[in-house]
Image (cartoon, rainbow, N blue to C red; front, side, top):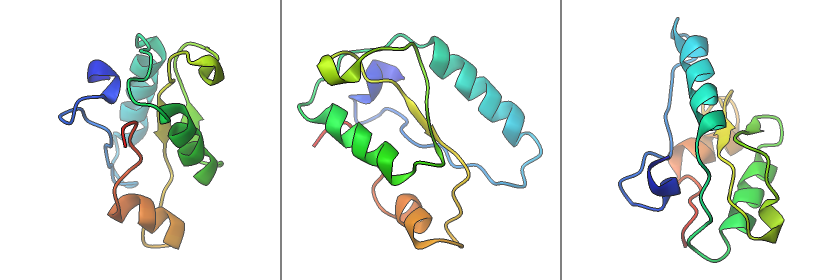
Length: 106
């Protein structure tokens, strides 16, 4: 959540193995901290639209976290956690894992 992801050095994706015994515990902690994170107003124009398109591409896996806010009226963007992707099984999931992941800046 460093600078709301608007620094090139900010972590935007964490990949975990489905077989990792601590995966669910780790994801529970990620959810906990994302739900408590302070939200920031997007810096780059069009960030809300790109976030919505990313979430729409993964309707079954995208989990929007953080305090409730109205992103459509220029408020802060809530973080999105996407889990359950399988790059080996589906072309769409492979695209997310092998191409640039959505980012808030152009």
